[in-house]
Length: 236
Image (cartoon, rainbow, N blue to C red; front, side, top):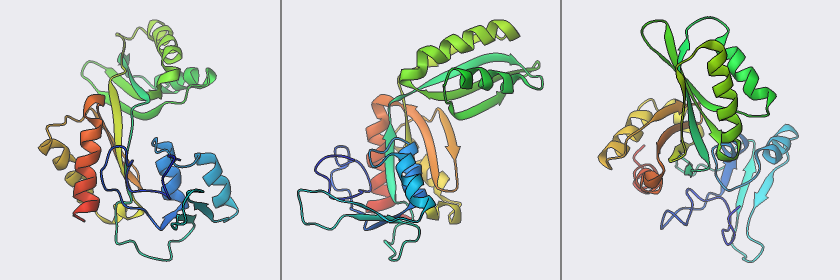
């Protein structure tokens, strides 16, 4: 958790000028934020608390201001569908290019990565003509060298066209349990980024989050614009 913060905020105060403090956050929302790079709590600690339904209290030890309760159910409505806007620049993108489109290839690739302890995220396969696919995914930057080595070896084994990578990217996410009930939220997110001239490289979504991969120099601009739209203006 960020030092000097009296609870869980709607965004990183180092990026957004006036983030709100949340009084309550559900376990699943907090875990989603942790996985997506928010500097709150370790996902495993939240998972353990959720398993035994132990409420967690996040607050500063240097202030008397109320902090944030993390629990199973939110007893008080914050009036927010989107609870947090977060970014993570500690990831890199890897693309296996021109992979033969035959059964079992993806399984073999990701089994090879798993054997090296490399956990891919945001896996996307693009269908190409001529029986070939591109398979892209994110990895933590500290795992990039290992991922490239595995992918290059695998590329030779299956006669793929090669491997590319990009370290100048960041993922930007909006998180909230109410996303599933608002089908317009993804389009709103994309339109906000477009209005800022921010190009989207990859997209993924869950019941709790929508994530876009953008160029890392624009990630803070994206966070500020999305926070203003969804939280400051309350556009949903």
